[in-house]
Length: 179
Ligand SMILES: CC(C)(COP(=O)(O)OP(=O)(O)OC[C@H]1O[C@@H](n2cnc3c(N)ncnc32)[C@H](O)[C@@H]1OP(=O)(O)O)[C@@H](O)C(=O)NCCC(=O)NCCS
Image (cartoon, rainbow, N blue to C red; front, top):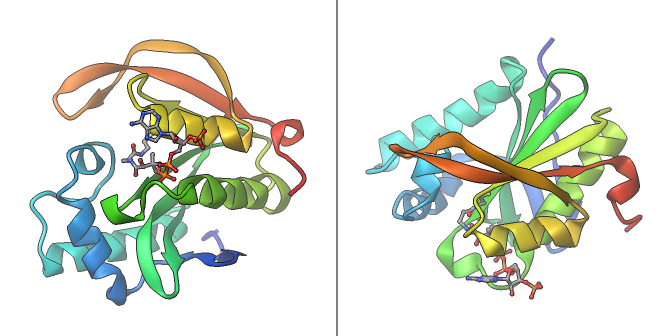
């Protein structure tokens, strides 16, 4: 059965399905050194490819892969956040912001809102997150939300052409602050 679309709010942030007006944020992300390596944002990218990316995000619901949402503020897309469904009521979380939206703690707010949806509404019982050790902005974001580091997964996955070590983080319902 397809997953239901959702829109999640934590003013001024709104996490909502991608729309055609989000193309500029995808074009911006396509120029980031990391985002195209860890997501399906194509690089190089043009408007047609960005629209195809948006279409793929909508398909994630139909294929029951998970929820892929635009992180928006005042109508403008600033990034993406995804909740990817795994077996045994587990799911993993991934996120990025465009360069100009960074440095304001917005990813943490978006992650916290998505985790609340996952654990309280989507009946997920364990959330996971994989972060490279050098990516302190990302693991600090995760830790602020309550994720706990479980260990280092050696040579866990390809990032571009290279296998990389990854910290494994998890979040259980009791780890999430009430607000
Ligand atoms: C990870 C990302 C979403 C965080 O964005 P953000 O919400 O703007 O994060 P912030 O800049 O507010 O930083 C979060 C924390 O990390 C710290 N931080 C930021 N940049 C840092 C750096 N280069 N080195 C060390 N710490 C850093 C901040 O001080 C903040 O910590 P604090 O709240 O304890 O002060 C953003 O950097 C990004 O999109 N990166 C590229 C994609 C990516 O890495 N995605 C995650 C893959 S696992």
